[in-house]
Every structure is written in structure tokens, then in C-alpha cells.
Image (cartoon, rainbow, N blue to C red; front, side):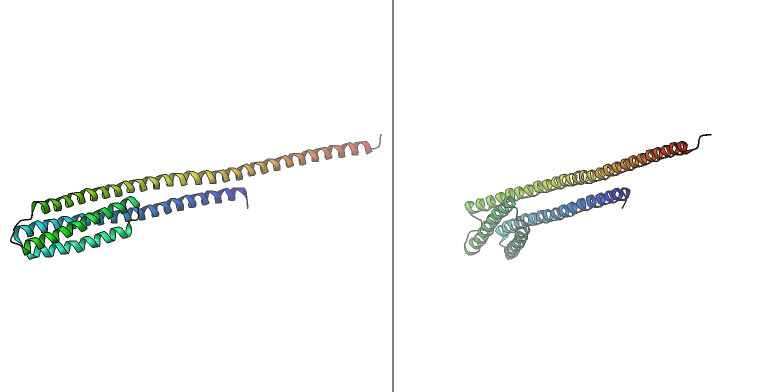
Length: 227
């Protein structure tokens, strides 16, 4: 195979390798982006269900409507589903710890809510005690803060992943370009050296031919009879 074809094949391999590597990085990055997007959705659902449950509790306190008590149970199950989904797809330590803290706060909130409902249902009081009301409000506030922290962690990691993918793509392009550029230079240098050797051999051959012709002419001249 000629060196020109080797250089062409090297260039084709470089283009295919760089395109394949960049595509692979993009696919991995896309998968991570989708995973973080799902986690953001689950995080928002966790917050939404708890806020809805808190609203239903306030409504129950104001009117003792059994439908509000049922709604709290519905939101508790919805929260459990969202939290389970978030835990299943999130294994990053700091985010996992944040989910655990949110779960602890949510469990305490729903427990306090059930106690509040029982307190209102089985006693003559029509309002929650200030202590229980403040405890529930504090749990909701702390949950909101922790959920906000979780969202910021996801956004931070998404930005970090995008930056890493960008630099990986740049590194792969530069690295493969240098690699195949070096291979191409080797082929070019070898081709130039072989071309130089070929020209040198041709020059030496012409010189040998010229010297042989001169010797032949001298021999023929010396062999001619004197007149």
C-alpha cells in the first residue's frame, strides 16, 4: 500500500475516531442529564405533596371535613412514591443524605398531622395547640429549606457534568488529533525519506551509467588502429 493511501486511511480513521468518541461522550452526558432531570421532577413532587398535605391539614383544622383527612393520606402515599423514585435513581452521597433528611422531616410531619387530626376528632377543642401548630409549621419550613438545598445540589452537579463532558470532548479531540497527526507525520517523513532514497539511487545509477559510458568510449578509442 502506498504512503498516500496510508495517509488517507489515517485521516479517515482520525475523523471516525474523533466523531465516535465525541458521540459516546454526548450519549453518556445526555443520559446523566436525563437522570438529573428526573430527580428534579421527583424532588418537586416531594415538595408539592407535602405542601398539599399541609394545606389539607389547615383546611381540616378549619372545618373538620373528613375529605381533608383523606387527602392528607393521599398526599402521604404520593410523597412516598416520589421519595422512593428519587432514592432509586440517586446514589450521589450528598444528595442521598439530603433525601434522607427530607424523608425524616416528612415522616415527622405526617405523624404530627395524624396526631393533630386525632386530637381534633376525639376532643372538644376546635383548634390545634400552639405547640403542635408551631411544630408542624417548623417541619414544613425545614422541609422546604432542605428540598431547596437538594435542588441546588442537582443543579450544581448538572453544571459540573456538562463542564466535564465539554472538557472531555475537547481533550479527546486534541488527544486524537495529536495522535493521528503524529502518525501522519511519521508516514510523511517515511515517504519523504524513501523518495529521497529513490532519487539518490536514481542519481547514483545515472552516474554509474555515465561512468560506464565514458569507460566504454575510452576503451573503444584505445582499441581503434592507428592510421
